[in-house]
Length: 347
Image 1: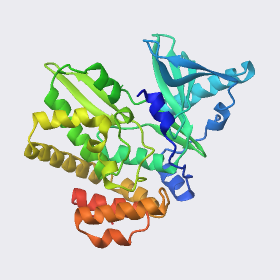
Image 2 (image 1 turned 180 degrees about the vertical axis):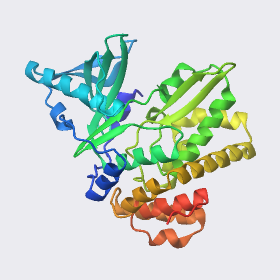
Image 3 (image 1 turned 30 degrees about the vertical axis):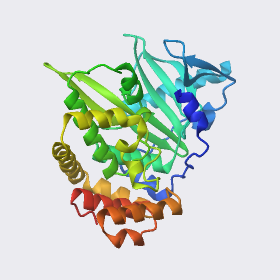
Image 4 (image 1 turned 90 degrees about the horizontal axis):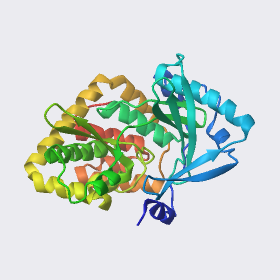
């Protein structure tokens, strides 16, 4: 089944949750709140869209958005200013132009992708404009705190601007390397084990293969891999514990099989423990930011009551800790989950 066919089968989508004043205060404190001239709704005023195909001629999820001449010039000027704010804190970057504005009509966020060209060296970059969603913003903040990677994003009212996360979507990586023994396979399996644990610890769901990327680095004597999430819509939303573990998605079965082939359960547990220690150190270096975020999440609503109750039951059984059963929102659940998983005391 193609990616488009799979998305077309989805009848249920996660609702959007508005960004309330307490979360905005946190974003302002940590320089994530900004004033931009173009909103997500402005970009919806396209006159037409043209399907974009991949190099083999197959349809993608993206469409080139076409705008009226009087609007496109304004958009191009302001989009460059947004890019400068995102990448250089507003400092002017010369010789930039907007090459294209593309629209994806599938998924929760239905993003616009903006391609920026540096006319001096013809180098290009991307950024995304999306409808702002509180659960996604919580996910981006938790990625900043608990992952080894940094994320750049800005929020203005109902609009979210995100930097491009570089890498090969994992579903494409698996397809392109079918029946091929990739270099440094153990390193790749190790990274999946650590990524699996990182997603579970911070309760990031829906990590199917097309929602995370493989970053490949050529070391002096080998190939190194990094696995990075690129979709944060399902932060603390799902009701089942296993939805936060990438190992349980059928799209990721090849990665699970690779890990089982190359390492014993004891070795895999060592890598899990390594990632837990690394996340604990990241928390200790961002303690106040984490507390600020979780205090606000504990007063916010980013999932349904049904999902919240079910996850509380699942984690109560997982940890044999009935304290979860008294919780009524995802912020409370995540706080205790992090404390038990990482061996820390947050509040």
